[in-house]
Image (cartoon, rainbow, N blue to C red):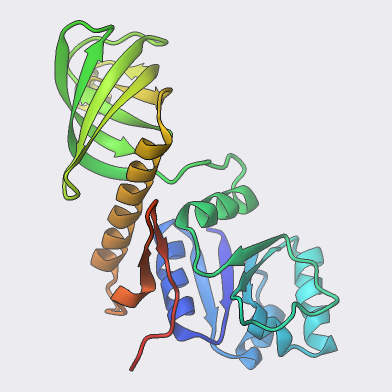
Amino acid sequence: MKLILVGHPDEDIRSTLELILKNWGYRVMAAVSTKHLLAFLEETEPDLLMLGAKTLATLDSNGIALVEKRRLGSEAGLFTLNRKDDPAFPEGIDADIHLDVPLDIFDLFAAVQNQLEKHPRSFLRMDVKLPGMVSKEGKSSYLGEVLSLSPRGLFIKIGCRLEKGQTIQTIIPLIGIHKELDIEGKVLYTVQPAPENNYMQGAGIEFTGLSEENMAVLEGYLESRFISGIRNLDEAGTMLASDQIQFHHREITIKLLRKNH
């Protein structure tokens, strides 16, 4: 399991990133202070460093050399977490990616996947259970169940026979936000009933006619579902506060801000 070292003076940023990254299947170490960060760098070999500009600004020349040693010797990537009021990025360190806070969850997912995975996924995918309707070339419509959803496509469990490469129309009611998507798609692959899949029949569908408006609705829905899932899975009780979620006209982004205690 890949190891990610998160270093930032803000507890809310550390805890929120820890929850998200663990949800994606990574081990996470959170450095509370510069002392902890240097100790982790000395004793471990993380696959990725995610460090705040404020944390990097506290490093002396020996600390900067240790960060670079881990980057070069262990081939660890370095992402910086930057706010508008953060100090200037110190000289002597070469970051792979600069991430602005508030963080866009889709940008974060793509960056982590590209850095750590041999076969990275380009899009955040969510397991869902939504009703869905498929129409084949304007003919009869068939009701099914959408089991996974991403900004790129979906997998639907459905009783009708679909063919690879076939163009279809899908209708998906996004339960909870009172929206319905009507999107053209293409069948990428099919799953035929068999004992090993409990006789499930379905198809993976790639969206081919997704408008900007529908993309915005879909991303907002997926992001809200993701944040809700993180809250429900958080066994430690460090729930995301409402002021850590920022609503935009187009999407929801994670807003990592210090809570008022």
